[in-house]
Image 1 (spheres, helix red, strand yellow):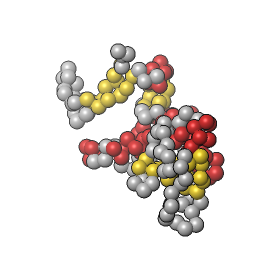
Image 2: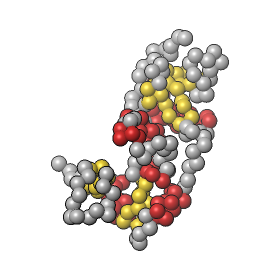
Image 3: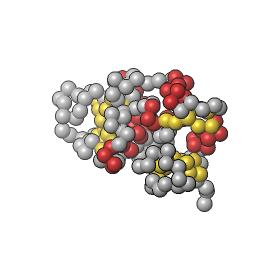
Image 4: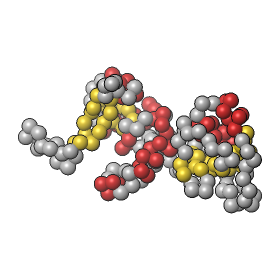
Length: 197
């Protein structure tokens, strides 16, 4: 297979470069740069406009996942990979209902642990980079940012601070403190407040 001309990229929409009848777009890089500050995200927008499907963008031939804010390489070949069509997207209000039932507390609001704005691609990349970590505990079969395991209920102010990246939930070592043995002994999760330097 040949390659795109200088200062252009190819975006394969519904097939792969090895397919002789592949549908792809040849896009000048200057057009992409003129229209957006996040070129890889722009490719997702184009693919969504054509297919009406969410998905991810990978760089051929390694099939390397491309983050939304990555710059595009000259004469590169990119492939749109439609998301899992079996994953049901829920409106944010409906999604929060499952956490509210699970973590029923007064005056709370459901929030995503991995931000909803980051999308499924971000979540799947995090899971892939930690493959095998602690036996993939808690992430087997997790394919959507809206999975109930990617959420918790918190005070409304907590939600705002979380969105601003002022708070984070981290896994800490499991030390028994204060003789409270009712807490799960193999893991603790801490809410950590991040301060600006």
